Image (cartoon, rainbow, N blue to C red; front, side, top):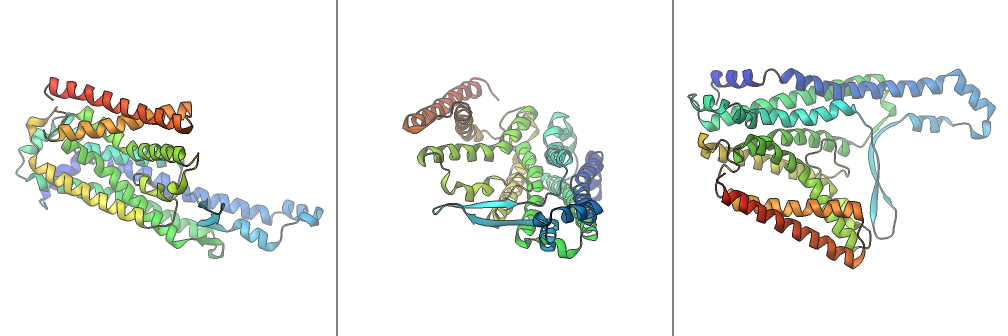
Length: 365
């Protein structure tokens, strides 16, 4: 796996996208923190301005105290618990945002595209035929692809974030910084793991799905899957708890494993789930890479045993998707609404699996 020729070959294949990945991460995090520092300096200048001093003198009864001014200037990255009812503890969150929206969205897209370039698009361009004749094992080729991608994403993310925090701390005095250390560490690590999962998911799909178009569509579906499941469970919980979601809020973070900066509560359980999924993705790709062959190019399922499992899983997801859409638009309520919601779920799943059986077993894929 450490042959220079193999590393050079993989480097040439992705060298065009690496500067773009680094630039987008730099714009998303470093520029975001620069903007935050600029906004803080504007607020501080306002409190030091002559106009603010005159406002204070004109209306002494509503004048701000020094402590109130300091509190307003204090930058918090903090989550604390507030009891809103006697039965349910809900969280009120105050976030210090350090991203720029459009580049931040592009970091998600490029992480997925980066993974697609490794396997799915290689199938589309028939580049895997050239790779197959190289004197390297399939596991070695996979190892180089994964290590190279992880290195690019890790360096881009931590360099951008590190530069941003360095600039921000140089502009904002330490007395005005009040971060919840556990929440900050959780978000930094969780965001990094989320980017790695976004990169590895299309690699795993690329080894299990032989059709490039099918691989792209299934990757997109799997990325949306956690939110779809969460929405479905939320609808069921609302039916059973008369409009309330109960303790579902405490479990939401476990469905945000693909979302950088998506966690809300300062807990490390979701991080363990991300780490477990990361290891699972690597092991599944490692297993599939050794057993897949060029003859599977163009097939929907690389391994025949995946047919039944795939159709069953996709039918359940289809049922969830249709039921969620119906509930979001119609807003069913009561026992009758719950029964109709479950009927829509079952009928949609059954319809999909009947269509899939005819498609898969009526035509060789």
